[in-house]
Length: 291
Length: 321
Image 1: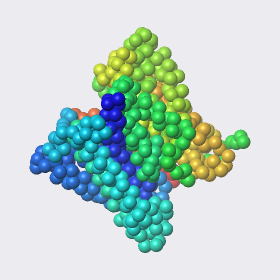
Image 2: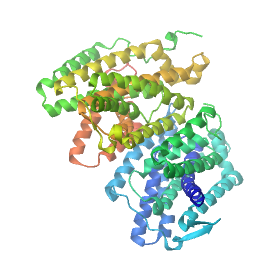
Image 3: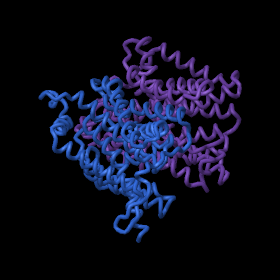
């Protein structure tokens, strides 16, 4: 029973990382209609930037804040320089943007591999978070507890921001009808840049948070990307609630799968996905597509 | 409601009479290719053989990307299944590679139906995500199912014959696939696919069950991709999980976009340029992926018509792609 409880908490930890990833991806897609296939690459970059900062300064918390910030800047630059020129393409502009992000997967993996090599590296757990906390009679490593709290806090912040702030209202207006939003005086173009950059930043945050727990290596980009895509498929694109529910579902399935049938973990997840797709082609909480 | 699709044709049909200059160029290119094994050494011939079989792969992907408007980021799935079928049947049961190739197609078709069913059911942007996800699933299977696939060590595949024989077989296959695709694109079915790419809602309104047509396209592309993979196994004599890796799917997309999406010649030119570059760059530097990504980004941003489209604009004004 203890073991099962421990697995549930571990699944929740992984689910929170996936939530940070899928929320960013979903947010970007919701507003810009762009599927950012380089999302996993930003996760990887976040982890490696974090690693570099920890090595230079020895301070995990500096890395925790600075690495996502660097990726936010990078994301904003990519949006402005590469994605923006394609919005005006009448036919297949969004498909082109998607292809563009595939190009960045190649670029980033090459850069990461040539700077840091192909080995699995680790970020040391910060002193304040070593050890364990007791929770409902279970011992949970402090760092994992921290990630659960972080995920929940960010989830609530995002929900408040989107549903209950002026900025969120503008964002939702842009999601509903970008042209109309621009017509009533919302700077949609700047909104796009911010959304893309912050989405990338969330991915980087997930990366730097995952570092001490899962290790840092070239190739972690696609690993997380596949799971993130599955989360989004199951939860429904453009839904924060869907992202949360599906992240936890996949996080648990992955953790339990690895513990009880290590050979068949991926199958378990795909079975869940196929089941959802059969009955809800646009995901558990996804809206019907009008296109 | 049954319907002939002749009326949806727009200027996309490749069966319009090719301009005679183009036709001559094609015949000369083909004759030159057929002569290659006579004066190229082993290495050159092997490189050309590889290029030709990847031409089939790129063309099959272009049937989805360029003609049906379905961006697949998991086409390596079929290439890999084709390659592994030949290798596994050959290594474990001693079955001749030609029979293995047939088996590969027979396996790829139902697989494409199954994967396509889910990917197309959740249309739009879900398609690209799901194709990638299913391909990675197969990649995981290839790595984990060690007793059959050899895991990361790979598997020795039966070769088709000498280098020259393999070359001829691949060339013959490419010619068959090329003319088959031409017929397909020009056929009512092909025109429905083009119609779906241009405006799916309108095609649906016109009474076409677009999902079924997309599935047909997906299955044909899957089978052709498996043929390319089977030929790769026969040519290479060795198969590793790399044939199922997402990188190959990405490379296929680059080949198509680089050469010119929505044409048949384009992907072939793209493949040739791509592989030549790859071999050349890999010798001199380890940054092939960086160049690959940069090339891809540049193509999508500034060079959307691809090499073939550019050539046509320049040399054959008036023939719109």
